[in-house]
Length: 111
Length: 361
Image 1 (cartoon, helix red, strand yellow):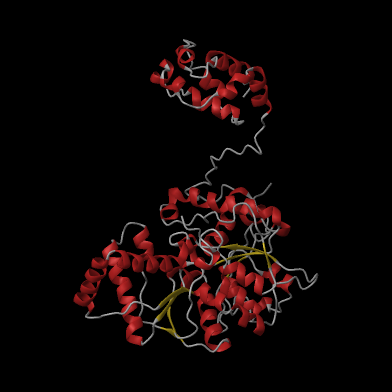
Image 2: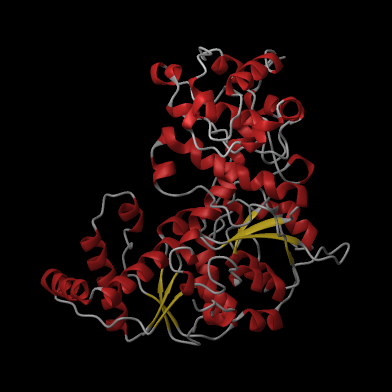
């Protein structure tokens, strides 16, 4: 297959395909922490995040991807969290965001 | 807000006396299609169509690649209209979807900003000494074939059915984005429910496949393929469509845009060579036809006269299914009977990669 140098390769789509994604882990996370369903995606967690100021870490993005079954790299991302808990103070829905970080790390260590 | 209705998305198409503008891409990749259009119109339907050797490219590819400025392309288009006026015609028919989009866009611009039309008239007069009248009717060639679909059905020698089982052929119809997505009212059925190709398929006995990515772009998009490094995005769009249509087992694809026909055909070759994946039956690709080729087959034309040997994906499985008589030995003989060369074997035509690259396992 490598006999021809095409100068390009076929781009993989970035579509999130919930029909084909395995949502088992995502369902487990929601079962153990149902309050996560209250998230309105306001982004206060990300805006107040110290780790996010220093790195590319984006809590809202990562937990949203995890809930949609996109687990690739989620564990490594969550490892950037310093567990300071400032996001917990700001969340308008009172979600235990630090607990979410810990839960995702526990559930997705294999991914 | 006024609701859009089906009747608003119909267009007036002239019945006779057309000025024909050719397409740059089609003349190279599907040269038989334009000839077939002229033959169908003049010989089968007895219409007056003028194939003017003096008209030029509309420079649409350069325009969409940011090379040709708007004022320049307006003047080029004005010259095309001047050629039409000088030949005594009023109905402009263009073979290319890009050109059709360009003409529609420029006529709409002149309507909204009359000073641009004045400037263009001045530029044209200064540079060539010509003057022009705007066309009374602007149509794409697929509009014309659609307009005469019932006449063609009456003259039909074959129908779009499987000759063995008498079941209708499953057809994927693909409409070029610049046909009705730029100006929805310029196309039959608008951008959401374009009926131009589906109407032909219905009239000639086939059955359209309604698959999830039916209205997705083929990935042509000028900028997407002009730079080699960007072509991965272009091919990804075609692949998305092919993956979406494959479960419905279509017998062939028909497109009304030169770029779509070319890329849906040629990207199948690329995907097969890169990934070893094909989307048709028995490890082959899905044949891609132009609407003139489809009309030509229905009217009983010889497939090699229609230029179907120029396709990347072999059309023989479709011809066999339709019960078309053809001479396999004549496939690569040109119009004067001279051998035109034969392409190498390809994965998309059911040849194994090991054979092609002579890999010793």
